[in-house]
Length: 444
Image 1 (cartoon, rainbow, N blue to C red):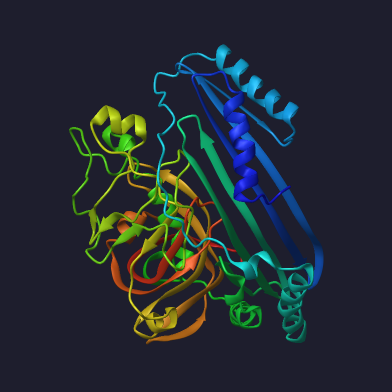
Image 2: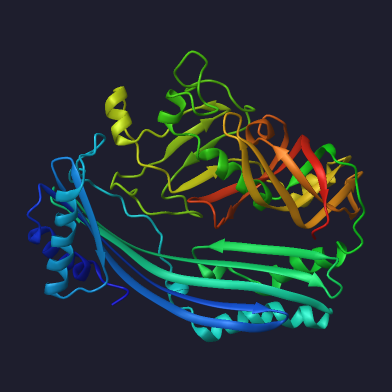
């Protein structure tokens, strides 16, 4: 039941819409088959397959809304979930910001499905674990990691005649490698839509090299440094910042994009002119569904254009109130860059620090997007274009807004996955000046 065809999904959704006696009804149907394998201490610890299918029903009587979900799909179950949603709607207070279901839309399909990823077997997952564990054992290193892969479908329909259906696939791999004494740590991660592009034998060498070379870390004084940030290191900071591109927050003075005296900074120069960032559902390396959570069609959308704010995210309610057009919320973030690799940026650095990864990122001040977090899994001192030695990890206090005004050079964008981010991202390696490290961390 987990993976339904378009015809099967539409048959269920059409039944639900016909059953509803509310002023309007929207039904969503999602299903997935996800496999995984986990390993630690150079041994596989768990593996499994998770399947799930769920129906959600939202109805409205005027501005009163009710929502119910179910994972049964016989006729009696479908009627039960519709009546439950209607009962809840009748009990609910009116929502003053209620927006009716969208009208019938046209969606351009995107390439979110890969046959090779959908065909992954438990044996293939075991081979990935073996490709990660075996070389680490041979090198007297310790590997711990997780591979997940899956296929899914998303379908929805509403009483205005709108309907959408599309299948997707994806895989995530992450592996941390430690030295036997625990003093060295390396890390590698890959997020892909098509598993055929994944080379675990090659990827594990990255984490192994960093683990072996980071064991004799030296302490550097905290302060402002030139840094070379790998794409995964800066992705979390940028993702945090994008949560403040909401037009309402800016208009109401709750964002770094608010103007003194009212209004927002749409059209203003906020970043270095080399910063260009956009959303594009059909990007060949980061395709996403062609609609957002409200059923609005996604399209290529400029967000930052040569350092200027090109678009803010207007909800349908706020767009109506402000006399604006509501665009679909982005599903991906594509940041333009150059052609150089991370190591090319290292070679052009006289003195600086290479940061493999940032983690435990938390907000300090939303008005400036000041964030705090830690480096980990391979932090190195650079001198005259060469990695000289590992350094102890740092805590940083930095705003991605300031960070993206201190660019010295951008590398080649690569696809990055982040568990805490709602976006698929293409982020370049970055060489930045004056990145602020505030204290040392004993963690590796």
